[in-house]
Length: 158
Image 1: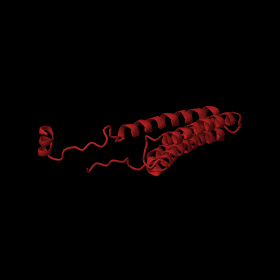
Image 2: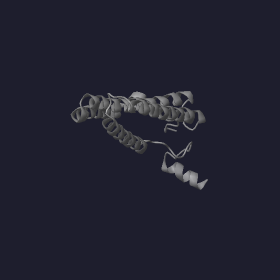
Image 3: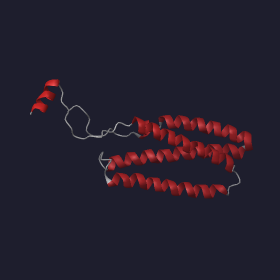
Image 4: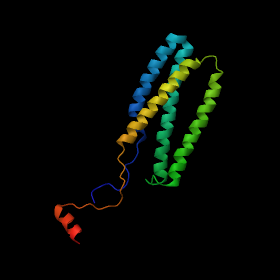
């Protein structure tokens, strides 16, 4: 059979190429708009919101890479889901802790930070949808397709 039976390896750096470009644009835009709105605290808030997106996106990509290696390319394994969902829970706790801590910081503009984080979340969702639409996951496994018309006729006759 010429079709690939195991999933292609997931590469962390290739999965971060386009998001990194958008994160860079968000960091520049957030910093400029933040500085225009509230000076240095706005600049720091815009950069921090973009940096948090980069860190959380990298954590997701790394957790998938670790899970693939730990399960030897078996994405249906419970260990795969445990690693990915465990990382998701870690990100959630980290986000809440950072948000609570950052809320009280005088050097941060909460509005600029909030808007930057919301734009980052929407950007993440867009990249998730694009990745989901481009995924090539077979829904039938280990099926041998006929290679010629004669093979197909022989299979139907026998």
